[in-house]
Image 1: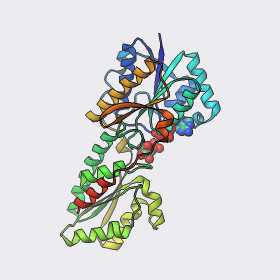
Image 2: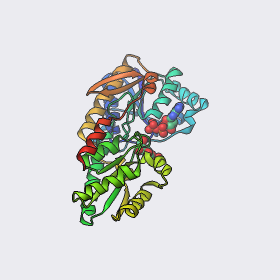
Image 3: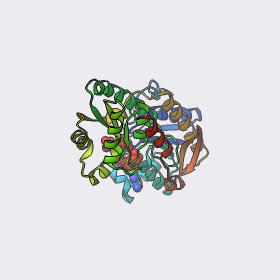
Image 4: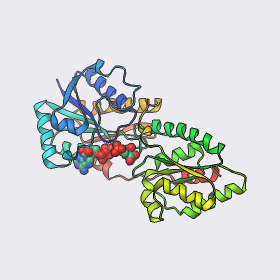
Length: 329
Ligand code: ADP
Ligand code: F6P
């Protein structure tokens, strides 16, 4: 009987549980022994794992977070750490590992594959910043959460004729900010992929809309623009709200949505994509194929060599940015 293992690594994302469920059930259906590894690569190095069966994953498809827990494991970035993990795989007869996480986790999966343990990566991150994928598990849920939260912020912003700066997650990518900004009709959107000028992109734009009778404003900024703001003398979202108030006279507040975006019950889309991807990962490992990343492009489930996947680049759709600016005025 073949043994495979599954782990979740890096920042958690809604839908990871649905992916774990698909891996475990598909593995069992294919007569495999499936081990669940706790806390990502930390658990792999320490041999913290348990045998799973089809009932181990009952009642989790609708839950956020990850039943396997997640972690960041600096030791796994070292040769010694990887060697320890390889040893644990050998001792436990593990002939394949499904790694659910972001591109950092895929680098680990690549290193482990190189040492003879076939790994398959599943893209799990709310940031949607994995180059080979149009879509990553967790993105849709995070977007819905952003929309719900900003709708609430809008109620109070409107009541007080204020401006609200809302900071959303996205360490290096503006997908959540751009799509979230479109969904809530934000007057201005700042993303790390686009250069901006506070005067032109925010102050002048607010004045233009004020001249047409607008009295409240939602500005969505990606977490990843902090450096660019600093270059313009502004200290984060709080600093931006203060700057806007000073330069427009519109009372302004800042809200950092934070980790609320990472939790909650996954949307239908995240559950379905995670289920399809988890199933594909087991199909690959069943055939002894490793060093792959499962991806979704135009609603199709594909898989790529991890090296190839990590060397790809992905560009945010600037046409979407233009649409947002044309219609949120
Ligand atoms: P994500 O997978 O969400 O991008 P991280 O970048 O934090 O999150 O990576 C998660 C884990 O993957 C790290 O804690 C580490 O154990 C492993 N990892 C990240 N980068 C590498 C690397 N270059 N080589 C080996 N392992 C890595
Ligand atoms: O990668 C997902 C993400 O939520 C980023 O958007 C954010 O910058 C980061 O993780 C925060 O991670 P943590 O708070 O777990 O260190």
